[in-house]
Length: 378
Ligand code: PLP
Image (cartoon, rainbow, N blue to C red):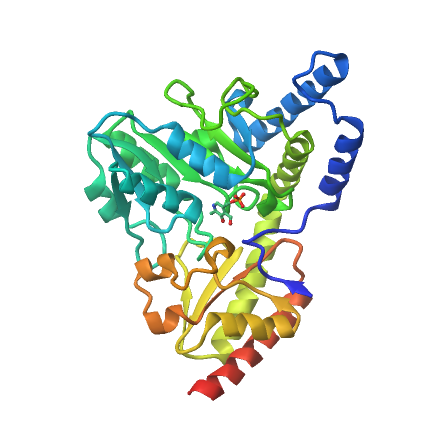
């Protein structure tokens, strides 16, 4: 089996998996208890925070552990809601459902919610963003890298634009497809909140991080026993936290080398498509993550391509795994991709652990599948 759906999840790193077992067997104590064993566990959590803070270049005290990026995104948005009736919220049209569905629910509740469009390349339309910003802009959420196309948003620029108009505006960024893949320096980006998910960089599932720059205006989303200085209650997932820190350290240490290797894999795949196939669009921006390749074929069906590839032992995606049961693709639609192409979209997403041999085999299968399907429909 060749796994090319790494934007949906990644295989856990062996060293990280071994650590989970070790922590659960040796350090299973509840960090909130008062005996020495628990105090030791608490200090291990602090070390993990320290390590994560170093990777993201932020103060470890500003890091919260969550059950995944879905919770981090919900917490960031709901944690900064305000009762001010004039407050306005901006979300991009390309957001993952864990942001977009929250935005829609706020809109339905009567909050002033605006959606900023994407340009044809899949990143946020800067001119449209400018028109939405004003002194009432209270909260902005724009993702770092699109899980659908790999388009990279210039978060530093977008955040600066928002703060130039309203210095008190809260800027949140979903960094799920960025951390472990590109260098992420949260101080430089100057964002107020940033979401991370461990299973996207060969860490455990169900483990997320939310960075919050300033807790003054933040209201906790999950209440309970007061863990994590009452900002996110619930007994800490100790093995999850420690293994997330290790996975992040490994991924960040090898960021640049992995990036260059993955770029070669993606370039080879694109070359095979362009040399052998027609009637397709590659949905990408000039500044695209090499980890994601979104391609749309006119008149074909993404699910059929996916199933035929699966029969040949290659797993690819048809878009965000979380929204794959929905028939439309909001991101591609908003980019202005024609419907006849959208239905024939697939997402091929790479990992540093994919080899060139795998990519040669998978791209050959892909070319054969598309040729076979094209002959049937054309
Ligand atoms: N945000 C983005 C951009 C994603 O790709 C995903 C996962 O697909 C999530 C959020 C949700 O992350 P999690 O699976 O940790 O809840």
